[in-house]
Structures are given as structure tokens and as C-alpha cells.
Length: 168
Image 1 (cartoon, one colour):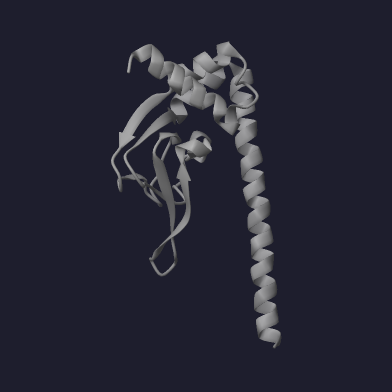
Image 2 (cartoon, one colour):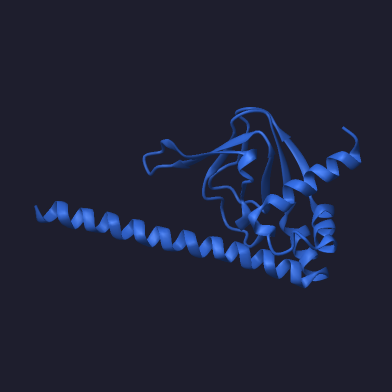
């Protein structure tokens, strides 16, 4: 595949990613975003992100698929979800915001290609084009708020189940 065709495919994928909805029709912003994207290939069963390690990159599944795994307190892994490129999915977006440890392990389920954005490049993009940085950061915040609400609801459900179990 020629470089120009690959760039157009990557740009097409970026326009499908929810984080970029507000800027997807702004050529200046999308071309600047494209410039900070790097491609990474992973073989099937290769670990992309390891739970507990620090990371500063976000990954967009361009081709292939991944499995997101979480470790239990007993040390066992369980599959949280499997994702495919056709779903226009991404992971590791918190790596663009903070320098904390990764919350899950992500493994390629097949030979896969990823569009990778580093935190340093994302910050530089935001410094150069503040509106683009703001809307992407806002989109990440909305995702985090949704996850927090779901976690709160899940905790209340578990608490109610424990109370009911103790009461009976």
C-alpha cells in the first residue's frame, strides 16, 4: 500500500473514533492529529498494555482485535471485553491525561495494527491547537464520568446484594 493511501485510511479511521467527533470535519485539526499518529503492529497474543505498568499512549485499533483482561485479587485474569477494529474502538486514553498505572491488560487476539498517540505529542498538539486539545480532553472526561457513574451503580448493586444476603 502506498503512503498516501495508508494516510487516507488512518485519517478515515480517526474520523470514526468518538473522541474526535467535534473535530472530525475540521481538516486543519485532523491533519495535525494525523501527524502525531504512529503505527504499531502486534502479533496475535502479544501484550499491548500490561496492567500495573505506567503508560503514556493511547491506542486505536486500526486492523485486528484485542482482549481486555483484568486481574482479580486472587491473581486470576478474566476477560472484560473483546474489541474489533470494525467497532471503531480505542483504549489507553487515560495515558494522554495522567502518568498513573494501567488498569487492565490488553492483548492482541489476532495480528493487529494500532494507531498510537503519545501523551507528549498530544500535549504539543493541544499547545499548538488549543481547541482540538480541549474537545478531545472534554470527550475523555465524558467517558470517565460515564465510567464513574457505572462504577457507583455497580457498587450500590453489590452493597444491596450483600445487605440482602446478611439480612436473610
